[in-house]
Image 1 (cartoon, one colour):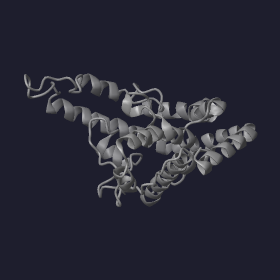
Image 2 (cartoon, one colour; image 1 turned 60 degrees about the vertical axis):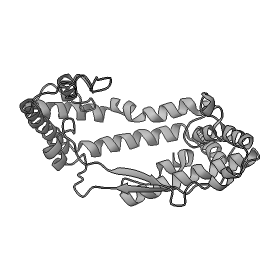
Image 3 (cartoon, one colour; image 1 turned 180 degrees about the horizontal axis):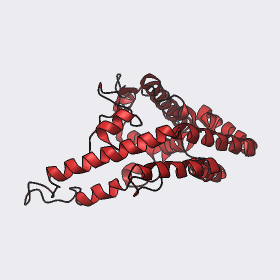
Length: 282
């Protein structure tokens, strides 16, 4: 898959590796744009984009017991999150080229890079070509891509996963919570919280009603948060006791390997096609 989708599939959740992965992907895209623009007779200089991944000091992994104890599922609470920011230390690399162009030259340059986008049309030009080459599957491989993206869901039909779901369900019910039947579904608490907060504020007349949309009382929120933490902790304990994540990962890897074995020739053709696009900019 890395040969097909490139840098976006490299790396891990380690912040240093994650930052490097974003940087590689941006450079890969910028180099593609430069090659594509050159083929059309234009000059485009890749802009160096620096991605900074910031992890708050009080960050807690969402799949940990501590997260469940403090934030539940993160429905009614506000857990600290990892922030990915972008910066261009040297500025836009094409600024001097742009400044020297006539209005007519700028229009032609923009069209080559973006297509009709600035005239109200769809995004096109080399930018669209980059999106297709680096991220999207051509029509010849669309069905294959759909199967790949559906593998995590399809693998849930595996008897091992079905047995795992049944054991998790039994564990949760034995802990006194019977409203949640499938661990792959969102907890019913999401719907309950939405019912308590029916208006998200969009379109609200803050001039006429400056206090904003109605919100549940502090007592109602506190009661909900306590129940949310309790259910989340039950879910975590049940998953942990069943080695849920480990088994799920093993099954998904088995399905992925079987898929690769079944479609090895097609995947090889797709990989070579994707690598040729990234190498040529066409």
